[in-house]
Structures are given as C-alpha cells and as structure tokens.
Image 1 (cartoon, helix red, strand yellow):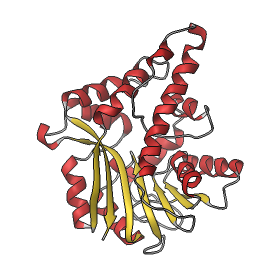
Image 2 (cartoon, rainbow, N blue to C red; image 1 turned 45 degrees about the horizontal axis):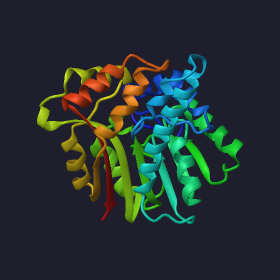
Image 3 (cartoon, one colour; image 1 turned 45 degrees about the vertical axis):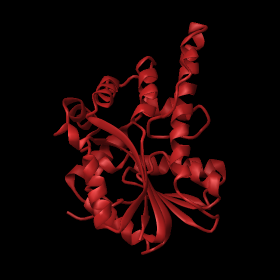
Length: 283
C-alpha cells in the first residue's frame, strides 16, 4: 500500500493513526488552545508557577489551564529559536502540524510562508480555518499529506521541524525525505521523547506511552544514526527532560488529566525516557 494523490495514507497503521487524530477532542489540547487561539499538540517546559493552585477554588481551573498553556508556548518558542536566520522570503514546513500552533508561531516571528502537513483531515481543516480567521491564510497553509512522501519540490524549504511527531514514522524514511526537501544549509529541528539506550530496552512506562498514543518511541541513538545517514548534521542538542517535569507535575494536578501523566513522570525520573531538542543542518 502506498500513498496516492487522493490519500496520504500508505499503510493500515497510518489509517489507525489518522483515525485516532480525526476523532481526538481531548480537553488538554482544546482547552489550552482556547486561552489565546493558538492550539498546540505538545507538552511544556520551564518552571511552573505553583501559585495557580492557590487562591479561590472557583477560578483554580482557569488559572491552571493558563499556566499549562504558558509552558507549552515556551516550548514552541524554544523550537522556533533554533530554526536559524529565517527571512520573510523563506519557506518552512511544520511536519505533523496538528491544529497548527507551531506554524502560527513561526509565521508571527519570521513573517515567512509556512506549510503544515498532517494525515488527519480534521486537523488540517481546523488549522486552515484558524489561518483564515487570523488573516494569514495567504502565507500559512495546511495540507493533507504524508510526511514521508510530501510531494513538495526538492530543496524547497529553508527549515523543517517536528514537534513530538517523529514517533509515528520510520526515521530512515523521514530523514531521507527531509534531506530531499531541505535546501543546502537548511535547518531541521525536532523536539521529541526518546528512550534512553543506556537504560536498555524501552521501560514499562515507555511501553504504556506507546500504547496510549498508538506510537513507537525511538531510541536516542536512532535519531543520530539516521540523521548521519541522511546528511543532517546536529549543531545543537539540548536535554529538556528536567525542564518538562514541572509541566507534567502541574498537569497531573489539573482537571485535564488523561491517565498517562504518571507514566511520563515515572519514565523521566527513572532515566528510561528523555525529552530532547535536536537541531541539525543539511549539508
């Protein structure tokens, strides 16, 4: 089974992932996005303001949601910080773009064209409507495409990023496509959870995360091996594991729990799981 012009889905597994995200209406994604209209599909970093748990009980949920959104916005800003020197004439790709939050962050910062890709029809439609409402649909567009075979032109992008979406694909295929899409000297950035090779095989907590999100978390070494095989040379690697724990601790005390919080906290704290930012240049 291969992707076609009519459908980006190339396997039964991709159909199951698309079905999951087409049906997904998780409050932890929607309620946070409602704070300011920027809908992210990732986690947060930085010290939490624990005072949000204090004060009037009737407004505690609102305060907590705003703080969780602040932390996830900090994560998106950090990723954008590592895209390099982007001009308004450049073109970026948000790979696995979700409801579009990261694309809007990049467009606001750089003024450039951004193409988001997702295999979820629901996400693509939602994100394009957000672009229309914001009046940026001439520069920010979302496409129903497979990140492994986008159909975009060779060398057409100055930068590409994945924000917590690489665990849904084979990295050898993914980075081969990015090596084709990026112009020479272009930048690739990912923020991702990966299992720690030195721990051994994936821990029980990592396996629980895989089952929860229908994904397959890669080992840390796989990222660097497949980048090297596809002309992507890391220029920055940041371990964000400690920086993301406050987000998870606060989320675990919120009304937006999904049942996976303990698995993330256990895996981060026992060292079996790491949260990394990797920026690499196409050579």
